[in-house]
Length: 445
Length: 162
Image 1 (tube, rainbow over the protein chains, first blue to last red):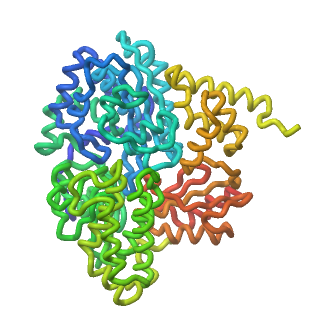
Image 2: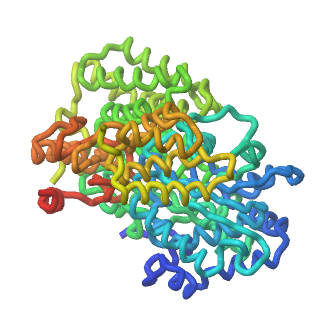
């Protein structure tokens, strides 16, 4: 038995309550009291409180939320918008979906609080097209909020009009990138925009727009109810609160869990409360800590906290909380090839390094996996990756958006950390794992 | 005379749906409704017939070329009529580590088709991550999500499609 340090539940606290995903159920557990409090405060005080809470964006970048809000110009006469990123598509990540399914009013109350703070009268929730059920639950919750007089001409009785609309995507990973999301919301194909200007200044329809992730905004009601200091204290010095992570791959108990910022990757994988370890005889070979874009870690790097700063020394990131575990019988080349195929498929085609480079890397990996590669291919692979984004990572690479980097970093980190595995494929002219490249749980039964 | 695209009932539903969607956007930004409008059309007809896309474009004050550009960018839009059951199997890393490649092969055998081939009854496709990583493997049948799959569960699902 292995136990992790206890985690005070914030995001998942009420998920098991019957009817929690209805307005009535949400109100039974204290729903919309935070909005009432926030509406008694000046918007600036709400923003201050969010800053003090150390809330950081849960969509991948971990950017401080209050700071992001403060970039919205106060003197701009144009309308302001809030856009919620519910386009959860990063491989390994399945958390926002469960907020929509289990506690949608937590998001809606957060939206109302954020719109009040920002002076935004319209919010669009951009949900990925494949979320048929989560979107249906959310639509019902939005209708309930209108019917109860929470949204509409008045915000919970206050003279502040707020309209909230759900827009469903139609299958494009790129639309999770915030400027591609805005393009898609404007009814176009999801081609990212050059930044600056940032969306806070020039966003949707050319107006100041804040784009925030579902989990980020759903954190606002507890922050207002229990105070910024309480929330900040739950976390570490620079990352407030708790967070949702998805544990997947070769563990005994995969799933979506609420962890502390102080919870280590090792605890997530092995503790009884979470992953419950690997099957007898199996060991961790590799872990992707924050969605497939996050550089891979090896078994010696598991004692890392799941907060936003902790992965920097190993050139990786906590990202969107998608933790993918590969055991010691997994083929690193095959795993990376699958990841590379994803970025090849999802590149939007706007920038040449990404459009040409991602499929090129996928072809080279296939060649190596199938035993047809040589050492020059491995060199070419790293050169192509470097032409998209530098390694070690130093921020934005050679493309308009971070999808370029997102595809290059896995290649660079896998090849750097597991070079022997690649070389073995080349020397043996084939995959040492034969037709079992996917580890202990890789068979369909 | 070519057959009209809509029955009178469908025409009514189409118009009502577009009218409602247009209230969600500023009056000078009608074309912003493109994704929901195309989805609305696809819900009515099962796919996006060219003359339907032209109608959407007309209602949104834009060109049919713009509608087609958007329709072909997003994988969930069908610009060709798909089989009665569109089946999307995720084979991304988290699912692959839980048997997704075997699941895809199992589906191909059971349905007698190959992934990527559109047929009258089935359109089986390999798809990217569906946010079911902790509940892998998974697939969607006409957008209905099914997860934690094994052979017995898949058999039961396919039984219902007959």
